[in-house]
Length: 110
Image (cartoon, rainbow, N blue to C red; front, top):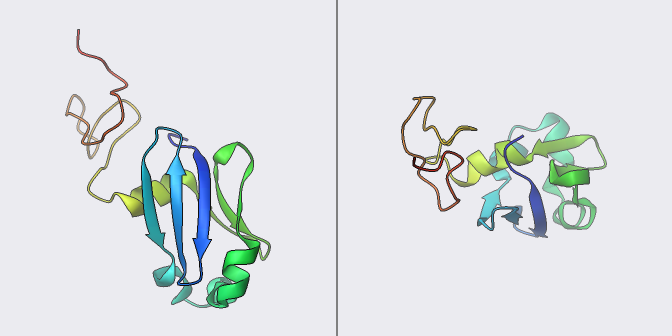
């Protein structure tokens, strides 16, 4: 796990404002998941979506009681799809490439 969620606020329009431990903040839209139906159908109820969302222990993701959960890392990617930062400051798996993020580099210059 690269990222931890420190705060999350669900909204009736099926979005969640998420803050990660590095201070980054974004709004993630859950409508594409809800549109898939099946297990995600319960999230279509705006009241349920807002009332029942919780942050998992240690900020590892978000969950709802119907056993739907989303990882903090996956949500981070959804929020910043162009910021494909790997664990060691790599972009798109290219070793040594600079990370495109506001967070401090995990590999400081030498």
